[in-house]
Length: 125
Image (tube, rainbow, N blue to C red; front, side, top):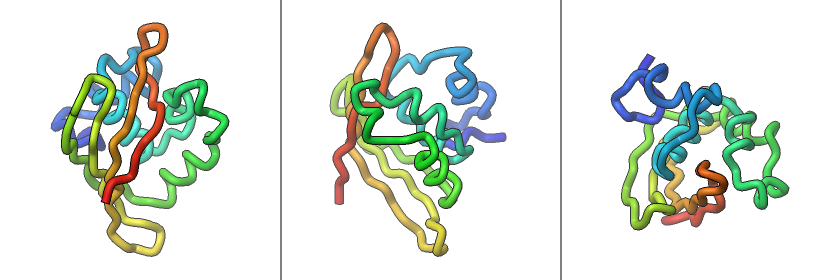
């Protein structure tokens, strides 16, 4: 199966090792891609585990899992990487009403104990 993150690689050689805990994402972009794949699969547990510990109180695994399940995640486009800790992307999906949507975000990531975590996102247009 092609990886949902649109890397051009198979899921097994791309995001799966991050989802299974076999490896940690080596860059903020890799983590962002693996999180998109985790919405597409879906894998709410991975999404929660890769959210910065200080921000987890604002999220819960059930809601993250459900957000992945009710939408069909169709494409990821990396728009810009303005720094090592920021990734701008567009996530394309079809919502539960069959409407095509684009989630455009500038995400902030932080490395804690040699592991990348999602901190926050700023919605764009």
